[in-house]
Image (cartoon, rainbow, N blue to C red; front, side):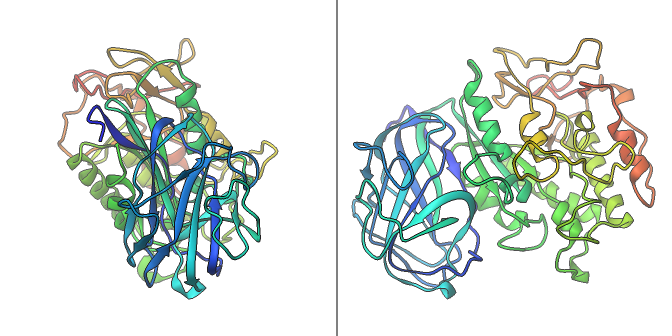
Length: 472
């Protein structure tokens, strides 16, 4: 083991029960994740988190993807597990492969191949999630070492593979995006890599200098803070999907909208702002105990959604507004660190009806506002002390947070706010009073949300300085 480097996640997907009804019997799977940071030594994580029985892996490999189901010649590497070419994964367990030497460029597309020799019926509860990527299932047989794998079927799911790690320098950190379908991007265009974590990874790689950061997308469509749906709730999976991720230093939590929507219409799952805030507070406490900076995103509007008509009502809107106000202005535990997807430049909200999303479209199938969410975070690179956000001349300016902890990476317009347990730091004496809107609880929440959103273009709240809490 290289003692001068450590493992950092460069790609991840959250384990959840597959809903496609697929089964396997003597098949080979070839899946194509796109990494964030690169490296010369990699390993693969395979999860049987939801399996009802033992998962047998007959063979496995990793390589650089060429086209379709093909691997770039010369890049294929056999994966072993504790020195063996096969592995047995107990129900509910995880297995990590031995490391292999492979030059992986940043943002490279890999081909991860698993040969499953036994029968795995749909009732096995296959651990997988929709990928919005084209992945391949072979005809019967072991094709793990084949450069161009024959194709029996295609699938748009991740099956069993849950993470890829690279050996990276000690200063390299990792960012986990913990969210729902806005993060998972379950209706984005196949093979277009349009998720906002994909865009964040591209922007972090493209900047000159700064702390290297891997990006791990742990979005899960339908996910909620408090109650299970299509897998574990955010609170239940927080340890597995955030705290246990290799090299994680930061996490961005964008959960809560599905709590309010209450898709199953269960009375005991109708939530309040106070309950959601309590759940986010628990995440903050657990992250702080591990030295992880937790950033909370405000909840985007859903008054005009078409997928679940009737999900919005004035009471739920009031809870959404209250949660957003707490996230923005530290009602108990939170401290603002950057602006938010709900309010930044009114990108996601209609001016006349702030409970509704604006319809945005870039030629691909996205949720309203998802493109803006992925493209709006400005990145600025500085060294030494925390840097200021790049904002238009004459607008209110505040000091940006740093993903690097030393000011090397500043995030602005659409990334979230830091969540910290109450009393962990004293409040800044120079926090500008005019940036605190007077929010009143109204039945529809619209006026309160408008007050929190109508700001001069380029507005940035004052931010806490990690090194000098008394500064903004």
